[in-house]
Length: 118
Image (tube, rainbow, N blue to C red; front, side, top):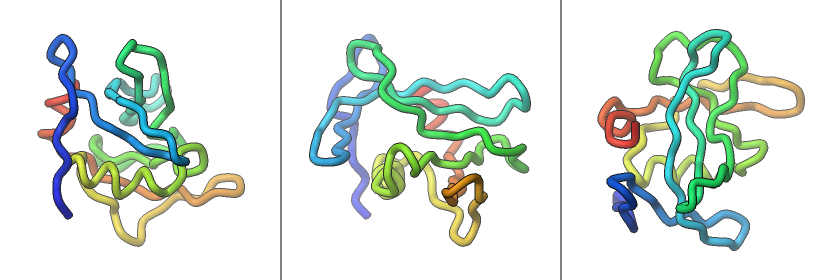
């Protein structure tokens, strides 16, 4: 898969073109952790800094600090190949966590990506 480069830099922060449900938006990242268990939190913001969506969902403790469950319930599974295409990391094949009506795939974020956006 060809790696997609950032489209724009604003105050040193990288923004990428994301197309979901036929709409393309320029999207940046917010990196943090969930307060109850320190799991990795990743959110998307617009180029004006407005919250766009949560990439991760906090279901249970993760064995690795760079792993997270991806919220395909709200973002659609199309977010997975997009994350891989921008060099964020990789889907952990065969690993998912079931919660409610949804199976959330686990994703291993790369240290380099997290450092670049953090």
